[in-house]
Image 1 (cartoon, one colour):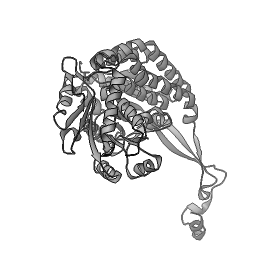
Image 2: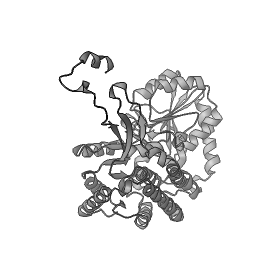
Image 3: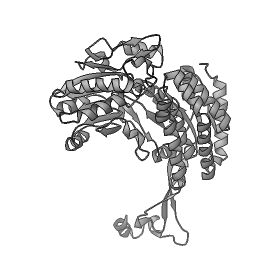
Image 4: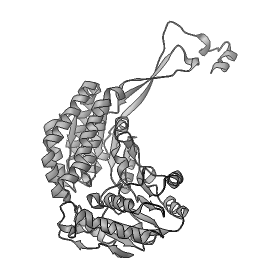
Length: 458
């Protein structure tokens, strides 16, 4: 992927700042019009998007629709429906000592946004974020991942065809382009990627005191307790782990299974793998591929410790790694030291739930947390752990509710988006107090006469 020259990026910045200064983007009708244009563009380019996702990730049209396209179009509909209400000033109660003033919150767009997206859901994670920027009234510079070049090209064509580049533009490139972008004085940077690069983004943003939203990742645990419904657990964990061949930031990263049910659970998961993808998984059009050779080599290097219960087959030419369950994994194994981001599930056991909770809590705060078991115990486990989001007796589903914020905590990120939270992510909540002139109480002025009265009401 060719890098974007610095002078082009600087020119985009100058033009977008000028466009934002024209105040056009603050008009609600303007924002709604742009959201409509975006949805029309997505539907027009849907076949090209699906074809590009197949070329880059071997992602089926069905999976492309469920995990990328439909999420974007439903998010647009949600913003279209609620934007006027979200953007309206909100009255706030004014304390008696400030009367007869009135108070309100006014929602302002932050300005020019930089949105940097990863390769695993290359369409959804770029365009879904853009929806929040449009909704809030920002201008945007978009930067897709070079690791999914076909999707990146389709998105570039779509954006160029749909929007004035002084309002929304897309630049291509790799690390060199990112370095140039991060050095610019944006009004907000929204980055989705790894914690390692997230730290780079945050350091660069600090130079200009630019606010950041970091959607990162980490090792999301999945605990299956002794009293869990194993048929349901096996099916839902298998599904959540293998969507996009495990290249999902909220996929179950590792399994903590109660020792009394571990063997039965793993056998049921193996059966579900076969049910979902057939006897010859490599021939299934529903099973994606690893994004590139570098990621493939990293993942195959994780297969050398523990005992392979299911899977383990690889094909370097096709970047194919079969769904793989690794049993008898130890905490010091390489596979437990980093986010896996692939179709490999390491399994550890426990005898007491507090033992599993302690293991989760001594590691970095994860982006997602999954627990399978009875509701009473689930509430206790949720209360004793932390994560960006969580599901009880399911995986991934919290990402599908527009009314829930999506984001990390600690090492897994900061800030959240989706629905109203996307609008808030690109907005500044401005406090405004309006004071009439028909009354001007002397109490607040020096020499503070009647100070005893002031002390009683403040």
